[in-house]
Length: 476
Image (spheres, rainbow, N blue to C red):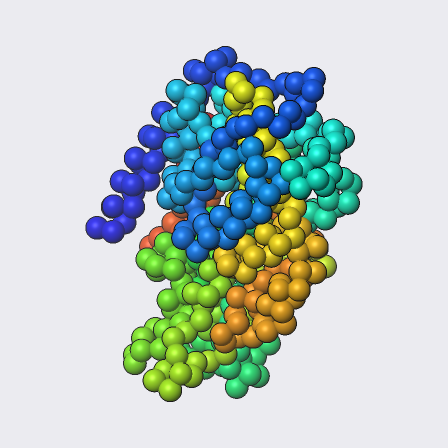
């Protein structure tokens, strides 16, 4: 019944997305294109509407940042609204774009931007980034409209490059706050049994078998996102996944990918691993399980943004049942490490008033380059800053200095994320990349858990891959 409900929800989402694409494509010619006015920013009074997914705690951080921003720019009024989750933001904006009632700024993922751009709705940022216009702010200080080279260099490369992953080398978004996947492990159990934290997938398989021998009733590893696992392994193997080539976007049906999916199936059938969709819940619930007779895991791979959910509950004496260790995810080749980049960026939408567009950029620039905001937002959200200088903020340094596998687990997770800054990657973004992600996730889930006779496994896996490619092409 639960699976049927998930299928129905997926079908409804697919229908909504198709309607959004058709509607957005139909209004392409109506969307005005932004051109920087000759005088640039004129300081006129404007109101900027900002859509995001922040809860109350993060909105408090944002409100403080807006108050500070308005000390510099009192004529730029910010109205911000929480719109559910990331996909809810996408869906609402897709609807509003058809009537040209879109916000000025919004949270976005690359595939969202690709969808909005079927209507030419997102303003490219290059003309702002390179602007040398000098601005005198309300407090008497001076700034330039654009970014200095030092500010550009301050962004983590992987996060910065995400904003220009659309094939035309133009910048469509700036990163705001990022997460990735981390390996959480029961450090107390590992120490007790002399286990080594796996750094490769071969080592992971061996460690899972060691754990299974110690606790035959456990599932050694839980991996939350099937889609992330598939996409990350493509990147680590150097195997095709998708491309920006409009004639052939979908490349994931190949021998390398078929082989690693077949191997992961064998892991599942051996009882070494489960995933969120197969298990029916976040696998952190297995990792933190302590009830009598409960099935548990000793490793969990999940979002760094959910690090605090990997911490087990304290007992009646206020003690944790085990210490949590955190490491980077295993690699195919540790000398060429890759970890998926996630978390929101910001984009600006076309608007008939050029001063609203410029003011939107000024606010975006502030949120993404202000060290204090980046540090405060990271500590409150569990995500990591997108600029390296945030590590120099004294409050953030104090936060990181307390990192441990207990009460300060969020700081421990952040420290691992910061240490692997050169590993982050994103996949090509195009209208249809969301479908590809959905299909490879469903593909991996089915191939791992399906009840096939051994003599038919190879043929069945090949068929699932082919069907996924056909579905991607049909829906794109």
